[in-house]
Structures are given as C-alpha cells and as structure tokens.
Image (cartoon, rainbow, N blue to C red; front, side, top):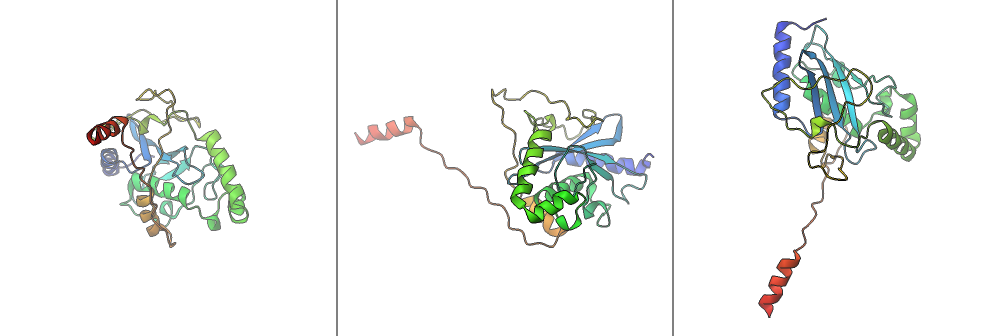
Amino acid sequence: MSLTPQALRLLSREIISFRTDPPEGVRIIVDEDDLTHMEGWVQGPGGTPYEGGYFRIRFSFGPEYPNLPPKCTMITKIFHPNISKNGEICVDTLKKGWNKTYGVGHVLVTIKCLLIYPNPESALDEEAGKQLLADYDGYCKYAKLMTSIHATPKLPPVEFRNTPNPTSITTTKPVSSGKPAPLGTNVKQDPSPLIEQSPTVGEDINLLKSIVNVPVAAAKVPVAGTKPSAASKAKRGAKRL
C-alpha cells in the first residue's frame, strides 16, 4: 500500500537531510521512481566480528508510516543473535520503542549499534545467542567467517565512495535480489584498494546508551605520529656543520 501525500513529503525531506549529512558508516539507496523502494547499507563497526563487512537492509513502508515504524529486513547473511536467518531484525526501535520523529537514519544507526552490542537475551537466532553466551571466542570466529564470505566485497559499495548531491533525491535503484549491489571502480585506482573502515563508534555508543541501559565506554582511537623526512634531517645536519 502507498503512503499518504503528507508521508511522502516527510520521507522526501528525510532523504534529503540524510544525504546532506549521512551518519558515519550508514548509507541509503533510493529508487528514483518510487521513494518507498529504499535500501540501506550498514558498515561493520571496527573492533567487532563484522568489521570489514557491508550489510544491506531493505525498508518496507506501510500506509501508517511515520506513525508506525518501517519493516526492515537484513538481506546480507549474518551470524547475529538478534537477526534471524531469514533477515528479521529484533530491536526495540522497530517495535514498541518507535517514535515517528526517528526516520531512516536513526533506524540504520540503531542497527549498527546492534552489531556492536548484541543482546542474546532476546535472540531470534538461538544458535548465535547460545554460542555468544557459552563460547564468545567461537561466536566471534564464526561471525567473522560469515562476514568474510557474505559481506566483504573487494571494494566498498559505491555509496561509500561517492559524495552525494544533497539536493538530489534520485540515486541508483535498489537491487531486489539477495546478491550484493554492483560495485564501481576505486576512485583512487589503487592496485590494492582498502576496505573503508569506521574509525570511531563514539556517536553510535551515545545513541546506544539511550536504547539499552548498559554502561558503555567511548572508544579511543590512537593517532599515529609522523616521522621527519630525510630532507629535513639533512637540513638540520647541515646547520650543525
């Protein structure tokens, strides 16, 4: 069922706002012919078994949106307690905790937080939940394996490498199959392109504090120092002479 004209205008503003300042590690793909045909990308957070992976989510908007949350399905295969094998996602934001002011960006950031802090107590994938509690190292090892097989492309998805036009709504059409979206070429054309990683999870952790009542410490990222060049060393040596 289609959205009301008012809901479509709201969704259009959400898309423009998102594209103007996308949250760290998440992106959206919008069908130029139908704004409700939308998919999202979540970049696997650093320091988790999902690091290096890109996970695709399909949005489905009902006629009551934004009063009711969209339905979100994880298309990319993943080993996670709160995501079932058929892609159902268990997070309070998409259920009783929904607020009509949230929007698609909030939903994607919440799912990213779920990758950082899974909740085995409300597991949809019982196997993943039990293994996380009984054998955390084994859980991480298998989750990393699933990420490397199903979610790690040679290049990041094009949405992470292109700077969008914030005033434009239209982008490439979402891919309806379960296969990864077509990837473009590396912008820098490096012989061994690196997968873009999310260096910090501070903003996600702040959001997580408002979602689940657990103490979370902000992540600190060491900043590597720079070494003086050979030319500068030689110049200083000449002055001493």
